[in-house]
Image (cartoon, rainbow, N blue to C red; front, top):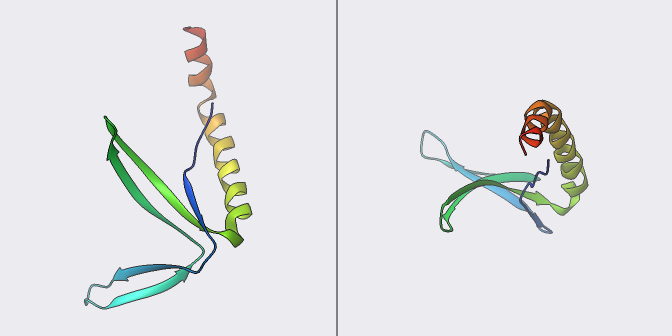
Length: 86
């Protein structure tokens, strides 16, 4: 079972901007952020794209490896069943 975690790596400060309930805009420096992407190519495709600072890339990659390992364990039975049906 293969997983892909799409990321954009930046070698510059990364900021998140949000609007508070009172209308005030806040800007916060972060090391990792994300946004939702959707496209029709030709069918609808949705993805969560992570934006990671260069300094946090190794840490982020380790976390995604752990997540992939957990997902593989969780779906092991389904994967085995799918191969049996081939």
